[in-house]
Image (cartoon, rainbow, N blue to C red):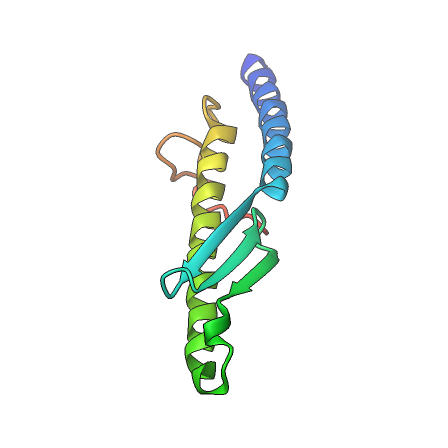
Length: 117
């Protein structure tokens, strides 16, 4: 029964940390850029598009395809940064908890856990 009590305590700690992490991700923003900063995309920590900045020199019909490619690249850059921040926050949220598959070296029952945001 002592192990069950410890597991419940750790689950409560993890739930609290996960709520804190979600609030932090919601408030955070990450910016991705492409074309030497000519196109910038801002995403929330949960991956929601918050803003786009386009250098006026790209706003010509002849540059349409270049602009489209730069938007995709800037979004991919911002998304990669959001995912890295999310992984770091998940590591912090699960640090010190001895729950199979969480924290430490990964693996285990929940090692491949993907969050829905």
